[in-house]
Length: 238
Image (cartoon, rainbow, N blue to C red; front, side, top):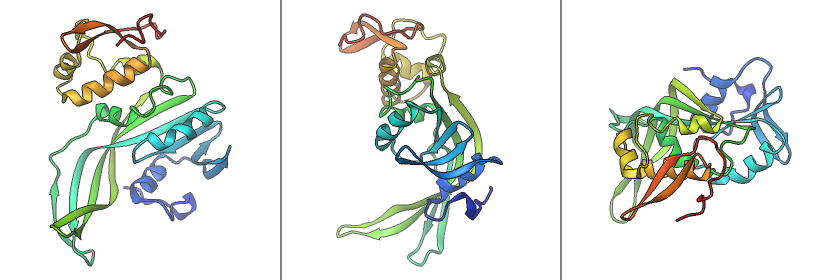
């Protein structure tokens, strides 16, 4: 793992964010650059790079303003593998264990639901970075029980990076052999993921106009692909 250099501007950053900034950095990059009333993580020639490790809802205003004028790459890390490290009150390690949870590219859609109207914009690219992480937890005692809170996350390594830019890139997450029309239950089975993930994917793709509604099957909405990317006549149909 690369240790970020102080000149990158990481003194007040969380370790995961700082390490990803160091991993992305190239010679000639500028860091923590004020622009249009915001501070940009990395500016590389004409491109802006924003690294975000938390919920994306707070980003909407910033991204909307910036992509109106500049090409921007939004970096979203997900934990493909994670080691949980429990610390005592003094910061010493009590024990470590491998988390059974595994995240993949599709889990990023749980965060993209806050930005569906911006996705597919020619000035916005999404990098979903698959990582191995350490998650450090400390004890917190409440009235009822002892709990554990996440103190920080650390980057161990970058496993892979998947970039989404054009609407077709997003539509490609739908398996090509999934027959139409389909429900989110059908999509969940095809993806081997919980239906909640399939519902979030369908919501994002529908708002991007690369999925459209063609009817209902019982209480379930039926979808089909819309490769034209143009808003279909039934885009407002419920």
